[in-house]
Amino acid sequence: MRHQESIAKLLLRLTVGILILLHGAAKIIHPETLEFISQNLSDIGLPPFLAYAVYLGEIVAPLMIIFGYYARVGGLLVVFNMVFAILLVHSGQLFQLTSHGGWALELQGLYLIGGLAIMLLGSGRYAIRKE
Image: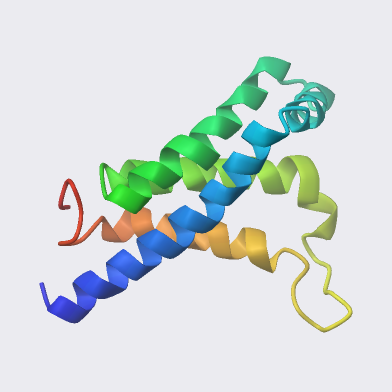
C-alpha cells in the first residue's frame, strides 16, 4: 500500500473517531441525555434500555477506529449509531436545508458516510491491527 493511502486512512480514522468520541464523552458527562434517547426509542416501540447502545457507537467504536483495532467493526457500529440518530432525532430534517443552503443533516451525514468509508477501507498501515 502506498504511504499516502495509509496516511489518508489514518487521517480519516482520527477525524471521525475523535469527533464522535467527543459526543460520547458529553453523554458520559451528562447521562441525562440517555433519558431523551430512551424516550425516543420507547416512542417507536423499542425497549428503552437500548439507549445504552449509544456508548458502543460513541465511545467504544470511536476508540476502535482511532487505534485501528478492528476499525471495520468500529465503522459499522458508527453507521448503526448514525442511522438510529437520524431516525430517532433528525428524521424531520432529512430533506431540509439550513438558512445558509447546507443540508440540515450534513454533520450526521458526514459521520454516517465516514463510518461507512472506514468500514470499507479498513485501518491501513498505521494501526494496532492492520486491515
